[in-house]
Structure formats: C-alpha cells, structure tokens
Length: 437
Image (cartoon, rainbow, N blue to C red; front, side, top):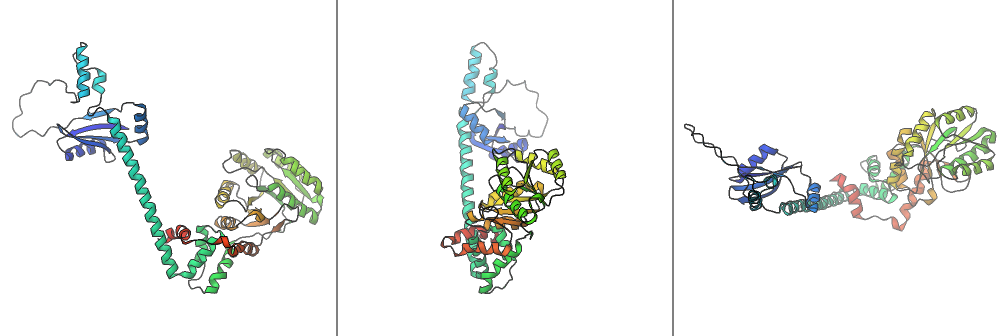
C-alpha cells in the first residue's frame, strides 16, 4: 500500500494530480482545506486490514507529499534565473518543532526523522481508521439492502408464479416436501407438459422422478468382482457381508472371496474376518497396489470377489493414497456406498471427492434411519449415478435388495403424508423465486 498527500489550489486540480500519479484505482482517504488550497490524501493498493493493524500497534504510516504544481508562466521572455530557494518543508507544527529541535542541537538542516514525518494533522491514524470503519459500515449496509431487495423480488416472482401457474407451483411445493433439492426440482418440473390437470399435478411428478432415477438391475447375488468405496460410517463392511452371504447362498462358499485393504480402522479386519468365518469364506489382506494385483490374480476364477476399503472423508489426505492404490491395482468395478440419512450437502461432497475413481454405481444404506430420501435421490439424479442396491437394516443377509426406482419413490412419497412436511411460502420463494426473478 502506498499513501500520498496531494495539495492543489482547488479540488479539481487535486483530483487531476491523483489520477495522473496513482491512476483510476486510487482510494481517497481524506480531504481538508489548507493554506495552499486543498489537501487530499490518497492510496493505491489500499489494504484496510493493514491500516487497522498499523493503527492498533501505533506504527506510523509513510505518506509521500506531492506539492501543488505552480500555474503556467505568462507568455513573454523568460525571467532571470532566481537563486536556488532553500529547502521547503511541509508546514506542519509538529514538523516545525522537530526541525527547530534539530537546529538547536547544532544542525543546519532538520533531522531525517523530522523530514520523514508526515505533514498535516498530528493524528493521521484516527482519520484513516474512521474512513475504514465508514467504508466497512457502508459495505455492510449495502449488502443488507441487496439481500432485502433480492428477498422481496423472489417473493414477488414466486407469488406471480402461484397466480399464473398454480399447478406447476404445486409440483414444486410437493418436491420440496419430499426433500428434493431446488435444482433437481426445477429439472423435474421442466419435464412436465405445459398444461397439467389437477390429477396429473398430483401423480405425474412422482412418475417423472422415478424415470430420472437410473438403476442397474443387478441381482443381489451376482455382484462379480467389485470394490466398495465411500466415507466412514456408511456401512461398507456390513454391506460386503450382506452381498457375500447372498452370493454364498446362490453359488457356494468356494466361489466367494473377500479382500480387505482397510489398515486404518482398529478392528476393521477383525469384523470382516468374523463375517467370513460365519459364511465359510476366506479374507485376503492387500494393503498396497502390488499385493492387491497379486490377490486379484489368485482369485481370478472366483465368481464373486468383494473388496472392502477404509472409510475416508473427502477432506482427508489419505483419500489420495486410496485413490492411487485402487487406480494402480488395475481395472476394477467401483461402487460408491453412501448413507441415505446423510445431509444432501454431505452426499454431494462425497460424490465429488470420489469422482476420480469414476464409480460405476452406488449403494444406498441406512434407509431405515433416513427421515427423508429427497437429498439422496437428488444426488443420484444430479450426478446421474446408477443405483445398484438399497439397504435398510443391520441383518445379514436379509436387509439388502436390488434397487427399484418406483419402490424407492413410493417410499420417499410417504413424507407427503406427514403433518410436519408442510412448507411455507417464504421457503419456496427463497428456493425458486430467485431463479424466476
């Protein structure tokens, strides 16, 4: 940040100096009248936080003085050269006292400290601090005013839509009660015909929602060789046990094998070993890409090979290691496991975090613990992620089933019958009015 003081006979000339010296991006910190006319303090690369910190510490701000330019001489012969004038110092009482003190010590010129002292009022920091506070307060007030105007415009837009297209507004209201995210709800409403009957407005959106949900149609017992990935706590190990149990019932224990790459959690391998003993199958450890490739080569002839991985959050540094391990292991079918009771934002972040592995499908767990399925359905539609299976309990192997879009939508639609699922106009205006305004 560079601060300069400009003096000129009037404001117009002072502003012209600022524009010429510092450009159009200069910030005016203060103005006042002085004997020479107008004194103006301006800064470039203005840093409000830096000014506040300097004021708090009591450190001086370096201010360069740019004296006013003299008026152009009248036409005619040039005047005789005048003797060089004595050095001029800013006419500040503080500076004058410092200069006098320097001369009293036997020096003919003012000391360097006195010469560097800024001219003008003795307390420059309070003025700059006040300017910074005023700027911050004005910015906050403008932000509040903008939010108020946006809210009012959104309410007007939503009320206008309810008046002109009441059935389409009803569809958006029902989607909101289901917990569907605004962007997905607008997509679904856009798939509906222009003219809706009251009966269509009631049932057709659910049909559109089920058609937007992609499912793989895979049988629970025929999973092949699959690696299950996902955040911690979503139930990957229990899901591996459920799928393995169904495969054992269909193809026999000799055709099923489990692989563990989870060396992070305490007891993770023991839990998988416990399920394996109950099922009569074997667990193979693999904690790096080389050992995983060797294990998969040994198990090449098995009908079902399920690979359990450590649960890692999207912001965890270990996720990069896990992604590298699975990528280096070769071509694997990847299935992302997510909990249906998680918040919509958490689900979306998990999908983005594991996107480098390009999961081919998804498994939704903990349906029995989810008060609403809208966030999970929105995530599947937004990312076009096909759904393999759904799990709704801890029982092995009962509580897992192949995904059925219509059954899932019917289960989600039960929220429409709950008394607490009502939404008010302010919420709808906030979700949809901004896009309409």
